[in-house]
Image (cartoon, rainbow, N blue to C red; front, side, top):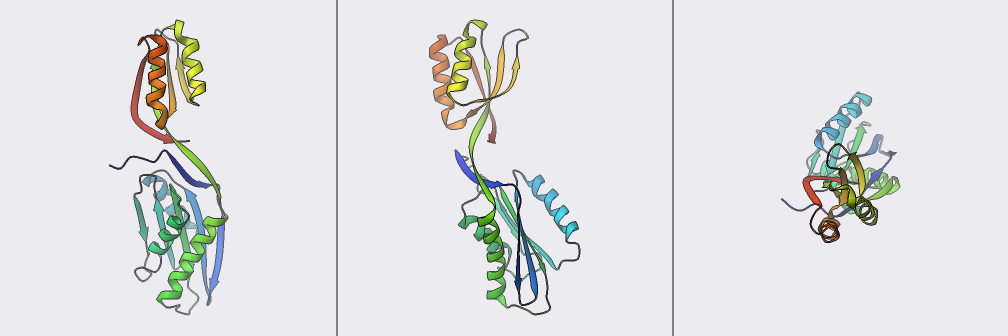
Length: 208
């Protein structure tokens, strides 16, 4: 499996863009998604919202570069792949774009139809707010009280995000560490405590 990138750009908030072409109406919407379940939930809502539409075509792409697209009854190559091309053009990840079409009675032809889907998708992606995210890995730190200052200082220095602190028995902190800094973080804890601090790195990752 290909390693996840340390940094990605994704979308924030929501926006809608409408395009009319020879009587047909194209409604493009963009969503931030992190898993297949998010995609399925949003598709159900959009299909219900536009229950009388002709097509609900879409594409999505995750941080691991996996993707999927659907023409939803449109001629092959005119809709889903064009929406995915728009996502790739903007170099975005963890994003879903749905373009809903209301057929206006006039067939557009393969070329103009593909252009309409691409234009609706890319214009929406250009207009929506974007944010940069950094990959973090869930990590647990177990330490004696005498090393509390060291642990908290390094957590601050490495911009880690504390999720949970437990003082029952041996103190331990569950936190999210920037993935690209984990080795250096663990090394500094080890050196500062003469290897008395235990760092447990999980295989769970999250973009923040």
